[in-house]
Length: 180
Image (cartoon, rainbow, N blue to C red; front, side):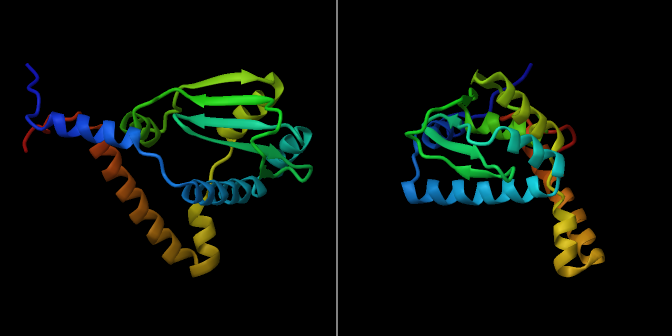
């Protein structure tokens, strides 16, 4: 029989608190700008990705999660830029997972969160291809800055830390591992 933690109410309260918070607009804008820079960096590593995005140039993609939303537009160069919210939206991607902790758990497990797709089918197919085929090689970027051996060492440390976080997130709330 599974026993519930006496502190389960803390997790529930934290989830409700986090889901109700809305960061200031300038924070959301900066996060969006940094995310677009990162996406463009990763896209530039894959010429096929740039070609696919260039074919969708000018179309608008609206990405939504809870009350946070932002618009992206592929450019003729095959990169992404911020799009004005007043633009006509060709594709809307809405992340349907409302619980931030469950969303984090899925992402740490390497799973895709559930997404409601509405709009241009061809654009959605190109975005799906990007999600399936693009990966950021952080270790390669680090090796350009600090050399191969230190970058590999930092990569190993990062992977070990990610495994520890993943194991922590995967452990059901209120349970303990055997032997603890």
